[in-house]
Length: 74
Image (cartoon, rainbow, N blue to C red; front, side, top):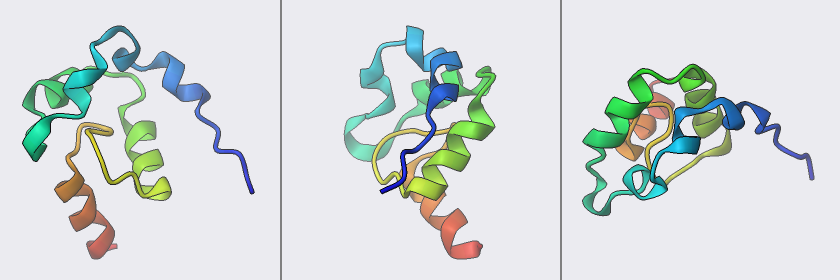
């Protein structure tokens, strides 16, 4: 099994934000998406989510459904 390099995560704004907003009930996530907008590792976070198949939460400023559409389109 290969270890996934998540060192970039330490630079994310999410490290100083309540983690609950990134895993909203009902799939919304508007507040988390706003936080992600200013994050220096937003792109890397999204790349991770798409590569790792993250199915829950807000990653790289996207919802689960947005990531599913991206994966299907690719």
